[in-house]
Length: 291
Image (tube, rainbow, N blue to C red; front, side, top):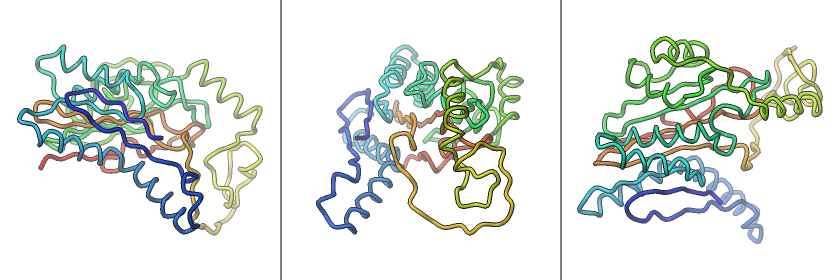
């Protein structure tokens, strides 16, 4: 089930995405098509939520005020709602930033903020993006190191630069020099324990290296570093889809006729160092416009 957390005026129905085992009584072809549709729905959730929010706003004489979050992250929607009521000058973009920032600080579900999802070197890095539907301006950071306030850095990219995305150590330089943020380790005792167990007890399994490539040592039985000895045949397949292989916090807010969205994540556990996920990619995880 795909949990949606909602705060706002009016009622937003809670959609459910059912796993493939719910259709085991049907034919194999139907199972496949149903599973494929479910996966598409997972990745299109924010777009669908935006349509629902705009529809609700269009059916009322007064513009709706609403904040929506993926999963049951009520910490985020509560923070967005508080921002709406405590600041007379608040905009939709402030609401989604406040919600994602609250989840970063509370490490929602271990998938957001510092202290979670260590990469294969044991370091936690962050991805985030923010977008304003009125202007279609957006900002994002990927593989952000040593700066815990990822959504604030993404907001800074949107407002202070003519770029849409900064990545890696240079994004940290931007946060430190331009935004005045202090660097710190993003690791926690929990993330260190996760990393040490993965490396020492499980020999770096699972990981994100190819098992079909001609790597030495073999990525399926040993830790790296790995070296590609020769070209290997690449075949398309069906990726594993579980609760832990997708998603994080994404938010949509509509307020005073404006709409905004934001996403923040610490990515996939044991990812290859330097990996940027789909979370900060504008148009991949979310896209907004007002018609």
